[in-house]
Length: 124
Image (cartoon, rainbow, N blue to C red; front, side, top):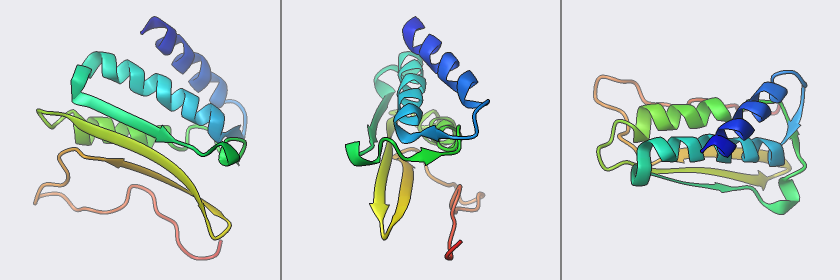
């Protein structure tokens, strides 16, 4: 756990300074973060991160995916007694990079409004 915590902190602190990072670096940071959460939650948390080799060098803003994964842990998996799985999938579609963060957690209650955490549309 200490190695993952060290890697997560080192990576996240260095990510807040540069303007760009790569999917490879971002997925390593996510893996460290989720390993820390797995130690805390045990078998209740399962996860997978799927970034194809051909997309690992793609550049993106730092800390773009981590808040979505953190929300999946906090609002999805933590609240479900039996836990669940978080998946991060990166794909290329029609010349664009698609990053999907999903969880099998509690979902929305009738009091909450459902929707996308982050969604873009159009040609911009």
